[in-house]
Image (cartoon, rainbow, N blue to C red; front, top):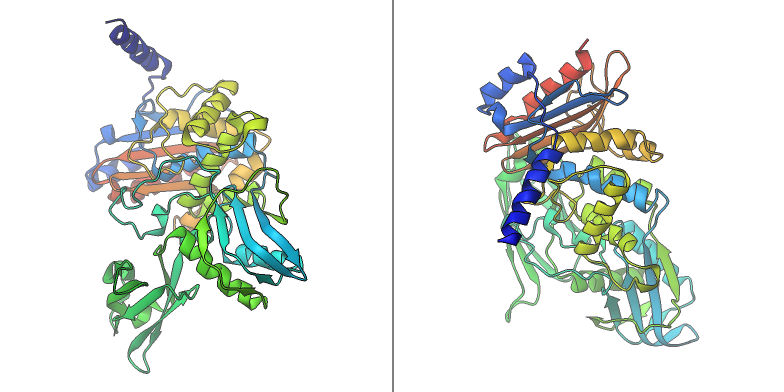
Length: 480
């Protein structure tokens, strides 16, 4: 009985802690929502000048909503303040054996701490720096130490039954190129075919290209292309990808991304190729392991600074990098002398401590992984707006705002509001899931006032809400 009473009191306290706000939605926005079949009860809006005491517009702003990728704003702002814009992830290289005349008599080990930016170029640089130590031949195996992440393993397809989509790649303490295979598609009308080139080239992949070149309109080419993936089995040790469907000449060159391999196999295959390109010798296998304490690394590779990494997270909505950054926040929740691993629970503690220190009370906040790729993450438009106001007054404001996509210019806003007066005047983070569409950021209006804007839609017709969102942004820019 006592526990039930406590829960009721907590729930009532939560309701009291949230502001109860309302206002009339602009007619231009309301009409578009009606055309899309979306009731106002399914939306949440917050509009406030950054120096004002009260919002200019709120609609259902106290309602906890799924923000989709807009949740990345909380993760990146927390990262910039807690870790600092100059924060870097390290990747340590260990020689587990004696090195004699450029020959390592033993294993080479890589211990990762979650670098989210270890792409092809940066991994090539890491391999080159190992080679620059004078090491040429490795007689043992490649060891991957991923123990820094203390997180449960789950099915990569659990979110939407699309395990090979790159946004579903699972966080890894050692993650190279987001575990991605890029398929470069090029029409070849001279022989009526579509050329497909895989990057990075892999001995682990068997590609069967059955695409048909067509001469119609391009349309949504991704939905006209189907990739069937077969995992290795007793008869075939490689991943098989069968491409079928149509690809129009008008589509030109495009890229199609898939995650096809196990993490260790992917890194091993790529390391062998890059090591050979550096005239190195290596014929060993790959396995996971834990580096014994007390061994000094042969080399330490550092990622680009966080200020650069957050641009990829927010401008292009990089889910994997956002999840890796969220885990990095857990470092601030554990004692400095006990940083053996990080967990999602520690990251959650770090974020809530940070909000408390900033006197921001978000009782409705639910964070699963910090990327917004979640069915359960929740935040109200009011509190997301207050987060934007706090960020604008923060020392990390320049790095934070510049990480957002610019309307009509770049990122996920490249084709939004182009040719309008708002183009170049709005820094926004977009979000999209099934039944969810959202946006949040800053608009510089026609009077040069900086306005924080949040618009959440949670409804089966949310996919039709983009015109309504754009109408709100134009209203914010034009209002008196």
